[in-house]
Image (cartoon, rainbow, N blue to C red):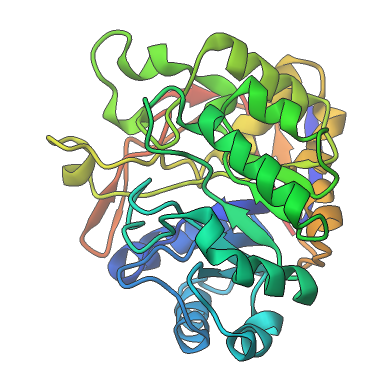
Length: 338
C-alpha cells in the first residue's frame, strides 16, 4: 500500500494572487488544497485602505470556486492614522512593509525605517503584526543579510510588536529566529530546494528567478534543517508569484516562482526524503496557527506517495503561467480532500 499522510487545514502564510483574470486563474489552485493563506497587498495601486482590502477579499472569495478557503488579508504599509488602524484591525492579519523598489510593485514602499516609527508604535499597542520584505538595495547576494540589522532594531525597540521576516533565504536569518522573542519567519518551497546555481549556473532559468534570489548551498541547508525540524517560529509561506509567460521569458524577467498547485505534494516529497513527514503538519499549519492565533476552516488533505506529473503550464482567462517543476514527475500527489 502506498505511503499516505493526511494534513489538517494546510496554510500558506505568504501568497500572491494578483488581480483580474490572473486572480481568477490562480485562486482556485491554492484554495483547492489550502485552508487559508496570507494575501499580499502589492497590487497596482496597492491595497492600502480598508475599502480596497474588503473589495479585494470579495474578489478572492468570488474566485474560490466553492472551496473552503480563508484569505487572511494584509494592508500595504504607509503612514496610517490611529483611526484607520482601528477600523481595519478586525479585517486583516497584519500590515506588509516593503522597502521602496525592493520587489514587484513596491515603488510606494518605505524609504526609511526610522521615519515611520509612530506607525510601528501604534501597531505594537494595537497588537497588529508587521510583515516585512527584508532586503536592502545593496549587492544582490547581501541584501537580506544587510537588512538583519533593521530586524534587530525593530525587535528591540518594539518588543511587543510581532514581526514576521518574510521568505527568508539565508542561514543568518534562521539564526535570527532565536535572537528575539517577537520575531518569526516564513520560508518558500523553492528556497528549501534550489540555490542560485539552479537559477543561473547554466542557461538562465527564468521560472526559478525570484526576489529574494536563491542563495548558497549552506543557506539552503540551514533553511531546510529548520523546516524539517518544524522550528516553532518558522512557517510555510509559498511566495507563489504568478506572472504571464511573456513577463517571465523576456528581457527584464519578472521576479516570482509559481508553486501554488504543487507545493503540498512537493513538500511531502521533501519531508519524506529526509524521514521527517511527522513534522510536516506543524510546518504547514500548526506553527502558523500558534504564531498568528488563527483558526482556519477544517479541511483534510491527504497526500499519497504516487507519481504526479506537473503540467507544463496552467492556462485560462487568457493567462498562461508556467509552474516550478513544469513537466516533471513528482513522487507524491494530493489524493483526497475532505
